[in-house]
Image 1 (cartoon, rainbow, N blue to C red):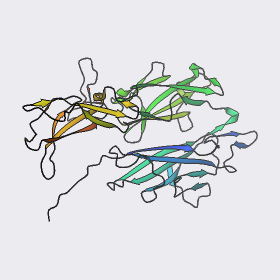
Image 2 (image 1 turned 45 degrees about the horizontal axis):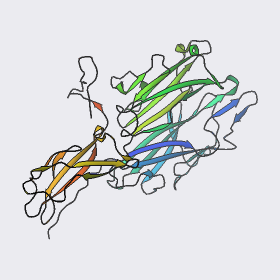
Image 3 (image 1 turned 90 degrees about the horizontal axis):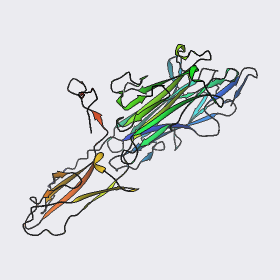
Image 4 (image 1 turned 90 degrees about the vertical axis):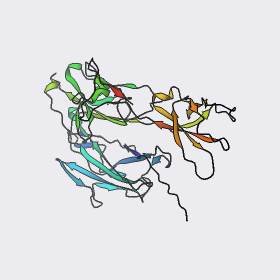
Length: 386
């Protein structure tokens, strides 16, 4: 018996998670010390929190979408963080109710109230098994339910960016400005009483200030600290950005110590190239005798039509195999949108088969040497490469 082995080299899944409220009950409370009342009161009407975990297969083998309902491959749990100690929430805990299966797997009902100025700090964990490779993806995401003291109103922090922004490098502009706003009721806080602190989530899952790492070339803080500009073409595959506010009624915000009760907002930017379709144009059906080369054209489209300037982030790779009996053995013969391809692989009797593949060259990154030192030009600017 003759056999031939086929191996698949799948690219890792891109896993994304977002957490939202799933009812009209908001995920923040106020407490009126005079009335000794919470609004809303979670002991009467629980707050319903739903995590949404989704996958994206860049190989197109698996359909994209949420995986919460895949009980054979998806599992999750919640923990509560108190005084720096994390404790898993069991089904016997009457302060919470967790859905363990179905499409709403991971949904948690919060049935207790937070203490004023001391938020409920929850941590969501989940695991998903890649059905293609068996690889286990583990995700951790914190979630906070604040309680504001209505008698001493705490300012609210807002950012003019969505909680999660999808960046398509083929269509979207590279730079996005994010501006912060700190409000007391419906009024903006005075500039002299507020100070914004911008931070990035690092690889070790800790936050630190923008600019504290030399790799922060993708985020620039404005001179007044009111906004930042994110160059999404330089951020890699994902960027988490946090803004916290120091607020002082006395006009001395720099003296305020940031803690879990500080006004906080987190946003996420995700790089995602959509599913593409492509074809080769300008390939003649027959080649005149003696033809040594021809010049085809790659044609790449998405759901909105033809991609403009695709070589900015995409690389067409051309292959050829001599036609004949049995399996074909392809070899790369050219790259680019409109290469000149030799007819050398063609058999006089059987011809040849030419193919094209489109690859995402990935985000722009800086160049470093074997000692992790970054390359710079004469002006001190980082040298980048795709």
